[in-house]
Length: 324
Ligand SMILES: NC(=O)c1ccc[n+]([C@@H]2O[C@H](COP(=O)([O-])OP(=O)(O)OC[C@H]3O[C@@H](n4cnc5c(N)ncnc54)[C@H](OP(=O)(O)O)[C@@H]3O)[C@@H](O)[C@H]2O)c1
Image (cartoon, rainbow, N blue to C red; front, side, top):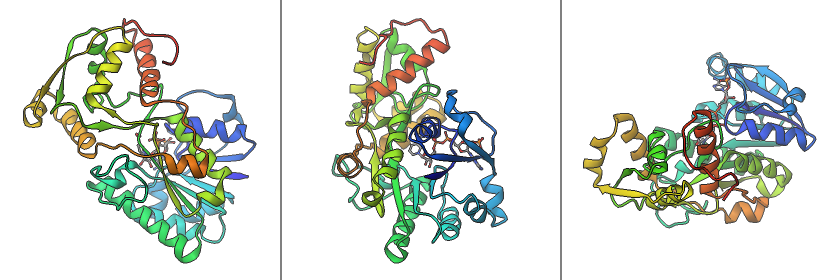
């Protein structure tokens, strides 16, 4: 199959594109060519790279027709963030594409209510990003109902992998949290550390995209969560990471209004966004209809990323060698 991947050199694409080549597909990757994939892989030699700046092309109302001209049987859109952007592409591709796969987010759910959250749960997003992603989902699913537009939506959790920092047990991205845990130094968590994070390894996200193509009929007209088997509480995550470093976690807790004053404004903003959502998604639907079979637990995904970060930065710590 000829597959166009829009935004294919980032977290997901770095794993997805080699998988698609390996599966025998012809792959066209659309990006601005400003960055390389996270890891080199010989499969990239077989990929046709097309340079388009989506924002600029959308401004000129040319993006949809440019993607259509690539004549993909399937189009995977990894970088769509507004309903207008989704509409421009979907309108251009209606009638010509056999499968359109949109990358959404667990943030379409807003605050978790009944957990694990299922795809059937009513959407109650908050924040511009989640609200727009939920609008895109509703719009694309309406195109499926009304015109049989062959769409699938995949909603990842916190995408994790070697080469970038995972969301840490305090809910932000400051690597200091992992460094302190590796030294058995105290870390302070908001509230009582019972809010949740739901990570997923980027290769498991890539697996879900690949399997959506394989199981196209079952996947069409459907949304799927793409996360690990289980979410982590902040405290459980901190305790497990310290143990992985061969240490005991020293945890202190502060109510949110006090906690947020102990970190930078940026870290507080990120943590709030994560704990306000506290995702904990079910993957039963993806397992049943796509044969999704995540290879990493949340901890394994994070540990691979942290190991890479510590090694690159020459940060001394006792780090186990194998996945555990
Ligand atoms: N990161 C997470 O934890 C997370 C969680 C849930 C859902 N998601 C969803 O995942 C998707 C993002 O996937 P990702 O994390 O793999 O992306 P990413 O790592 O941010 O990579 C973005 C890709 O898009 C290209 N790109 C960026 N701006 C572009 C433009 N204007 N025109 C053309 N290409 C452009 C980049 O290459 P160039 O810079 O070279 O153009 C790169 O290939 C989004 O839909 C997001 O909502 C992410």
